[in-house]
Image 1 (tube, rainbow, N blue to C red):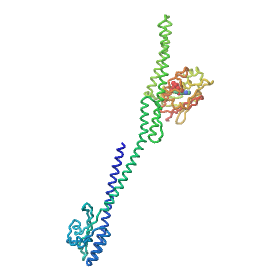
Image 2 (image 1 turned 120 degrees about the horizontal axis):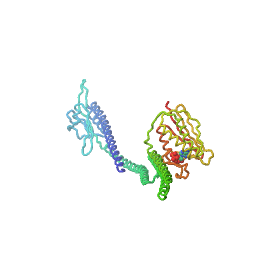
Image 3 (image 1 turned 30 degrees about the vertical axis):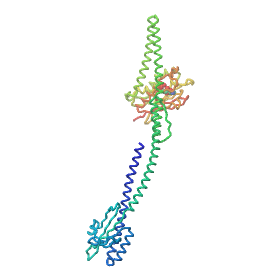
Image 4 (image 1 turned 180 degrees about the vertical axis):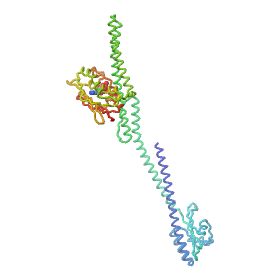
Length: 460
Ligand code: ADP
């Protein structure tokens, strides 16, 4: 990966360097060309005006050639050299493309390579205006060595090469640092996933960064905690169920054993069988309850317009004997008539579970245990609240109570019969509430009590 990054950087830099060097060389040649054309035009004008004074013209030519650091020739229309600042070509005939072009009236330029050196050659026609006609009387030919430009390009290339090496080194170092910063948390994450796969639920990764990877690790840690709490709830749940099944099974076993051993009257057999029947009924109820809890997600609502106030009163009158038995007073403070589309059986179950819990989790140290229930109707919503002065739930556990299998009691198989349960009641309540599109909230204080509030939106 690192090598690939470095190669990409080198490639990009090389392409840029070549483009910049080419651009630089082209612009330098263009500038030289412009300069030489200016000189050629001045030479052409000077020659035109002083062609009678050939010595002055030749001196001027030498001057301009020195200034431009170039060789300047003046040729006549027969391509014969009339003037040369180095004198060596005088009276010789030169024929090339530039001269031929200029003799037709055009300026021209080309680059030649002579003995390994680049030479820029430009030519301009020398023209005379005679009675409105333009006569070509000769050509100015200038040759200039491009070696200086090539030298500059070479120096620039060397600088760029040094810069490229520095950039490569810096980028290499940066890539090493950045890649390490990236891969180190990823390695930690991989280790975390491995630990979780190996069953170490709840494993937490130490997290420092607040960037995207930091968020990913935070999500991982949350997931790990959730998995751990689900596993804890599952174990609690299985514990409670096993215990709950074990009691009737043991009773049945003992009853059958004594029946098998003893030689009883038929009435005693009947009595024993009745006990066995009751125990199996208890197990059946439990299994049905479990199946319902498992199939929770699949349950479908049968919606009809119902009066919530009536349903509430029915549930309260059903549960009252149980509350009286446990010395808990139930009061219906206010019951408005609330007509709403709902599934009557499911609503009954919601109310039953909440009131049952309020009684079940009463504070036995208090003299007056109570459950206060009310149903208020507002303009756009109705509010059902169930308040108790029971043992309450501490803040730490409050957010988990709607989770399936969750129980606050450390010892789920407590001998306290009243507080028995499987941690499913509130999960059922929440599921039904959500399916109705209602909202449930809970407020609780340890040793003070709990209040569950259900908000029911009213459409009309
Ligand atoms: P279960 O009652 O079978 O344990 P629930 O899902 O009904 O299961 O309740 C989950 C947990 O929430 C209970 O174990 C209990 O600790 C706590 N809880 C629920 N309702 C109350 C309440 N009214 N007062 C105190 N604790 C409650």
